[in-house]
Image (cartoon, rainbow, N blue to C red; front, side, top):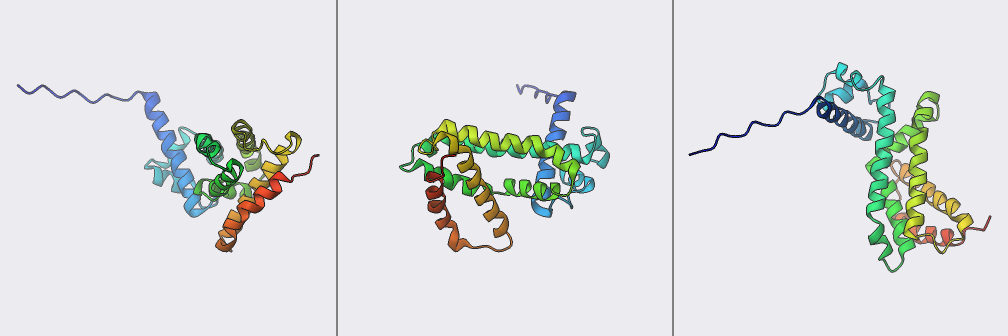
Length: 205
């Protein structure tokens, strides 16, 4: 005799709220990636998320409040990917070069393109700059912490590690941003050994 099917479990109000927030954050990230920061309007985010325009304001006080959450989420996702790669990087014959290669790939990802959009906009938008500042600090501090924990900079003097790492991140990030307009794939592979050389020869400060 067939058993009656179980009724689907109803989600709690908290679960529904969290699901809606996740949809909005994902929709905002995707819209910034595809259309740029200034075209990421409340209407565009809501439409992509499948929610009403008013639905966004049930979870966030303003569009900028959502953007602040987006900045934090982007930082978390990049750092999670970096942390997940640690065993693979340390197992490489040249872990520093492997780590630099990972950074080069990471900053060319669509997620970092979101950061580029936010930082360019924040240059002339003081309110946005203040909102995303904690997330960008978390991003850089997290990269430094993971890199130290992985031992990728063990050959660099301790007092120069932060300078060396951030300089390399800035170089790769700048190359990715410029490359979206003026691509130079012939230089991409050569940039890794150059970065390795300058990382190892960062002066002691």
